[in-house]
Length: 210
Image (cartoon, rainbow, N blue to C red):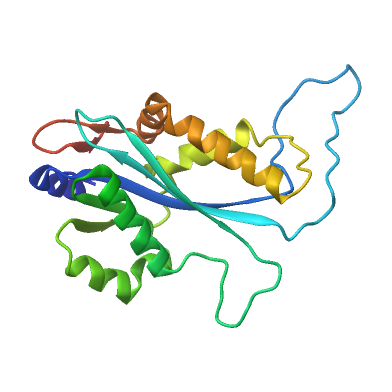
């Protein structure tokens, strides 16, 4: 992680963490209240193909307000020829471009070793655009990615124990609560703090506390 921080300092860049997660009509369960002796029950509409995938970025730079940028993708019940529900390398490229434009600065993109993240297309794109630097997280290190904290907040909070009536209900709930997090940079900062990583102004803006 020190390498990514050193690069960010040299470029005046944002440190941008990315991750993906899937959400379905079957809600995550969480501890809740109930009558004594009666187990709370959430009745859902059985198995459903309705799912959303979300790719999200937590963006940090010392002295700047932390940002959350995301892109949703709805899974289709009937796939056409050549169409897929998962994010492609071009989707990740477009999300990185969107982050670069919104942040108005170079970005050091930090993500895991998903095959699509290591696609030749995205590596070639980064090689030809000096505003984009890609750093791979160590294998099996979700604890180093603050976006995991975003997913945890959603699943333990507004999505927990909710019997979604249809896909629009799920979509509205996801978007409304992602916007809420976007408007609360302290929550985004808290996700970074949960990794044990801290931002410093110089010389390495990203380090892990011991």
